Amino acid sequence: MECPTCRKVYQLKIQYDQNAQIFDWPICFECKECGDILEFTYGQKGLRPVGIDYKPQQGEPPVTTLGYSSSLPITDEVYLKELNDTESMVLYSIFFNLQRGHFTSEEIHAFDIFLRQMQENFLPYRGVMKALLPIMVKGNTAAFSKKWAGLFDIKKYKPIETARKMKEGFYELVEKSYLNIIPSAYYKNCYQRYVQPLFEYIKSSSFEDVKSLKERLDESGKISLWYKDTALPYVVDRLNDIQKIIPSMIYASAGVSDVQQRGDLKIVTISYKEAISCYVRGYEILIKGLKTIVGVNNLVENGNIDTFTNPKLGGITSITKFAELTGGKMIEHLENYVTINSFLDGALNNKVRNAAEHEGIRYDATNQHITCHYDTKDDSKVYELSLIALCKMCYIQLLHIIEITLLARKIVEKAQ
Image (cartoon, rainbow, N blue to C red; front, side, top):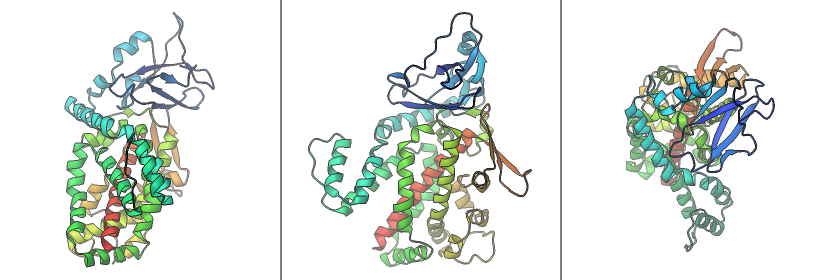
């Protein structure tokens, strides 16, 4: 194929896996020659848009090879490298290359099981919530019922009678989607250890205690408005476009916290600009919802919503004062809070956020390396990460925002 702007030719080498021809998968990378962001799709009908195929003539020099998989990270050997056809055939196998110092065959197999679960139970329905959300907001139960039936190909259905049941059905979709986008390692290492106990606490608490909890959390802004007006639209958007970050999910599947330890891997399903935008938006939403999960965890660990475990900053004597802090100060205050830090798993990196806000990010597309100049007063202070590490952070952010959304709703519903 060739760049439509400068006509540079690329050889696309596609990992033909179980997902390849089921959906239209995104292909996104920056042209080495002109810097244009090239966006294509590959699926049942081949490469789209039509007309971008390029057939090299015999004897032509090597062209830039782009290894591609809809589901797996790309190793450096086949990411925008000048390879002739023989060289690319020798080096090419995304699956095989990943086993050479990146992931074990057992880890890749576990990821494959997770992908099959998503392929069957979630990916065909990922756009359902985006289609239903505006109707639910409008409150039209009849229209919601008809749309629901159409989306799930239900010929005969009983219309939903009340707005309450309509909302219950929608949030049940959110919860089922969540359960189908978390791999077993994340379920064991994060959900069961840090999230599930919070839901169990709310379930076992009395109406009076939950009502008191809600009132305390609402002092710094109603948690119901946070999840209805802010978190839910974000969750719906991200679930609708989740195919763009699937290759980064392998780290959570393997239970990996530090992405860089797994070597130099690339992602070719999302642009750097979209990933940064996704991260910054998720950061701001997660920060606003953080008080809910911290407050409930304070109750579980310490029996008091205002008592933090190993607080870093002095003077933060209540969950309300904590909620009034800036994002950076919140993160600093929680540095020694082992439970919360383990739960967050790097999803709130203030250096990346600050660099993005102050246009202090430099991106090198040839190696997908991101340099964050996070201090406007000192350009020598930098934080470095890869594009796929950023996408992994976006994925963990999404999981946490869904978890807090469902937890906040449980609190609000029980307190009524």
